[in-house]
Each structure stands twice: as C-alpha cells, then as structure tokens.
Length: 441
Ligand code: LLP
Image (cartoon, rainbow, N blue to C red):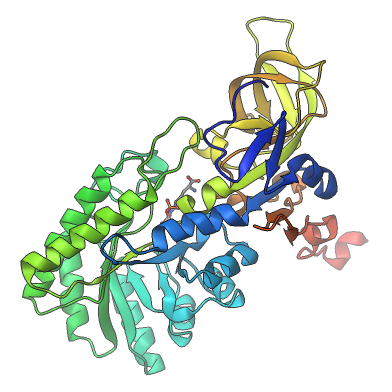
C-alpha cells in the first residue's frame, strides 16, 4: 500500500517509514499484544474534538456539549468526556446507567428517543436527568403520569421535526416529516400548550436533530431558522426556554468528504441564537449540541489481520482478501455501504500482490464486506486498520456467528496504553443460555 496517509487518519495518527503510530505507540505492537480484531482509540483525538466544540467563541459565548453516548459508550470514554466537562445525550435506560457508572452528572443529561418505556422514564426522573426530549403527544402524556406517580416534576423539551433534508444516507436522516422522529411544528405547539398547563411537567427547552454525517452547514442553518421561528411563537404564548438543543449530526471525513469544522458549526449556532435574542428582545437561551461522531469518529481504528487471499483466475470475477474482522465488528459498510479507509500498520511485504480487492470478513453472509474494490498491495498475515471507526463501530457490534466481541484499547495522551474492554470469551457468549434438563436424556 503506497498511498499517502489518508485524510481520514488525523492527528495524532502518523505514518513513519511505513509504520503507523499513535502518540509514539506502534500500532503493530498493539495488534500483537491484544490480538485482532481490536478497536483502538486515541485519548488526545477525543479530547481535542470535544474541546473544539466546548471552548468559548470569539465573543466568549459557549455551547453546552452533550456527547451522544450511542456513538461510543465504552465507560472509559464516557469517563474521559465527563472529566472534560461534557454532558451526555442518551437514548435508553442502559445508556443512562453507563453515564452514571462513569461518574457523569445526571442533571447534565438529555434523554432523547422515540420510544422510552415507563421504567426508563421513571429511572430518568429518579436520577434527576436535566431534560427529557419528548417526541410525541403520547409520550408527553405518559411522562406526566409517571412524574405524577413519583410526585415529581419532569423537565422537558419537545423534539421538533423541522422537515429539513440533511442530504445524508436515508437510514441516518431524521429531520424529514417522513421520519419517525420528533413532532411537526403544529403538533409540537400543541405539546407545549399541554405541558404549560401541567403541574408535573416543566418546560426547559426545545430540541431537534436532523440526521447524522451531515457535510454542509446549510441544513443546520435551515433547521435552526425554523426552530427559532418556532421559539418566537412559544414566546408569544408566554413560554420562555432555558435552552435550545440543536442536536448532533456533524459529519467527518471517511473518504473525501469536506464537512464544515466543528468550530464553524458551533459559531453558526451561537450567532443565530444570539441574533434571534437581540431581535426579539428575549434572553438568549443556552445552546446545546448533541454531537457523537464528530467527537469520537476519527479517534478510532479497527485493527485486523489478513487471514487469506483469494484472487480469482477469472479476470471478470472478484479478488477477495479475507480478514479476521467482520460485519459483526463493524456494521457500517454492510448497513450503509459506508467507506472506511484501509491502512497497513507496517511496510508492505515484498510478496504483496497489487490488485483490486474486496476486503471481506469470515461471516457467512454475502453482505459481510468491509471494503470493496480497493486497489491495495496485500499479503497474507498483513496487519491493517480500518480508519474512522471510533463512532458507531463497537457500539453497533454483535455476536453473530458466535464471534466474540473485540477488545478496545485506549492510547493515552502520554503514550501509555490501557485495555478498556477485554476480548469476550466463549464462556461469556453462552453464559445466559440454558439447556432444559430433559433434553439431555
Ligand atoms: N442526537 C440524537 C437524537 C441522535 O439520534 C443522534 C444520532 C445524535 C444526537 C448524534 O449524532 P452524530 O453527532 O453522531 O451524528 N449508526 C449510524 C449513525 C446513526 C445516528 C443516530 N443518531 C452510522 O454509523 O452512521
């Protein structure tokens, strides 16, 4: 593989004489110590991405960052971000418990999701989460009942579906009226009117989230405009908000995308809200972002080894490189036809075959591919990395084909190496299962 370091491998990853390093750590050594497949994350990359969003703009205005836990929920990563001052965006009781286990503060949590169970709502209220982002009138009703039963008042925001095309993969677009998320403007207004009358609901904000891997500022700007016009309507009803949550969704570079910087997006949001406050004479609400991918995506790699090469003698057929990682470890290619750059961890071996390869895993599904039609020089035994795998990699993994989940390793800013999740064992895979006694006879 002779290509230059891809843009998808940002600081602190670097290639030196064909070896891939992170903070002075040679990734081949990580692959050898922990085996493959294996996820690796860079602490410095995560903290830098968070800081870019969390630091004040030129007018000393700040946004509150609620990291979207679903992107990567490893406890060590949640801890890093909690220590850095992040709040959290969660979508389940499980994610809430992870945040608490990592020492995150419940009042800095926003709880999103279209289908929260009563138990989850109860847990959220008992733990005093900062805001429940309500997505339907039925949920509002349920939440009110749960809060009343507990003798508590639920802090709420209504998730508005602004009907904006985020111009991303249809599976990760969420802000169109055909998507299941949030409430259209009329229904959202109705929800606020009902909440206003309730003794067990306290309106604290408004939120929206239009999709993920968005690579231009325009859809964010359009959504914010609609949201602010809506907030003006609320103001006329006597409803004032402590925060406006502009969601997450900022894209990263997987291949050749050129998304806006986190700073540009943050500044746009802060400026639009400040301008709105100045024209309406309202107090400027706090601006919240629920970023996931842009904080952890580029920080992570999935290390893997080439098990076998299967070139075809038929020039019209495909050449397959079979690696030890598979769709159960990294779902994104199978699910969204996503591109992850492939980088060798070491100099190319002299026996390497330059060919167009489909890089596939051992899982028994035709959809089990990780990279298609890549021009690569590969040999059996090569160690390689799938880039930009820090977000929606490990969290979307499964045990399909009874494959143990890979370990996760954190490379600290000082170059030390921490195993933050060990490889699953076979015993753990079958732990919850039981063969009824009579089936043995
Ligand atoms: N807030 C809400 C309500 C969300 O649903 C999401 C992501 C986020 C924030 C964070 O979005 P981000 O900043 O990470 O784009 N599995 C897909 C992505 C699904 C995103 C789901 N919602 C993928 O691998 O591309």
